[in-house]
Image (tube, rainbow, N blue to C red):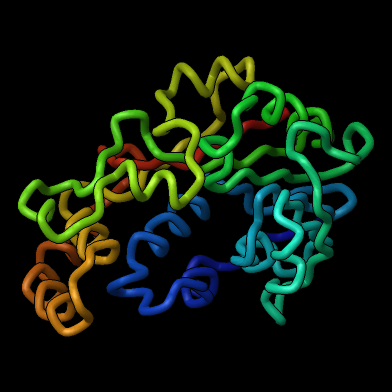
Length: 246
């Protein structure tokens, strides 16, 4: 059996620098993932983190699990967090080298929008999770755009530039598209990055210097704090986390 870390402990391990300003968007993502992730699961205690990169997010979420970090980039093997309790394997998410039902949980955090054959990747994730296990996903909404506020456009790279840098092959998904990918609706969903917190996201990825960013963060902080504290799983957001149970 594996158990989910308490929310406070999970958020305190935000791997993104300056977690309450530059990394607030990642904190929001982590909270949404925590909201949809099962509290505990029976079974072998194995978790597969597909496209885990270097964040070690699954290790933070399930600190006692036996975790495999699976990524297509072999160079990331040398950049895993020193504290992450995981084994790195390089490979393609569309051809997972694991037996059917090998894992209690499979994660695809910000991954599907990077994969051309997303249908195959979703099918493979479902194949290797055991009956009763979970597939956890986070992804942008199809209507996502950057910057969120037009006043920031002169100070921000164009969204197409960011999507090329991040390796997106599509903007994101609508809920029905993900339901079709996994052949069923999700058991749980939780949004993140709402209109009140999106300004921090715009500043974080802008070309503004650190000093100017700090000033804007301070000016926007009261509204952002309220937006963060008031955000509920069903609040309108630019990105969403989902949980499918097999």
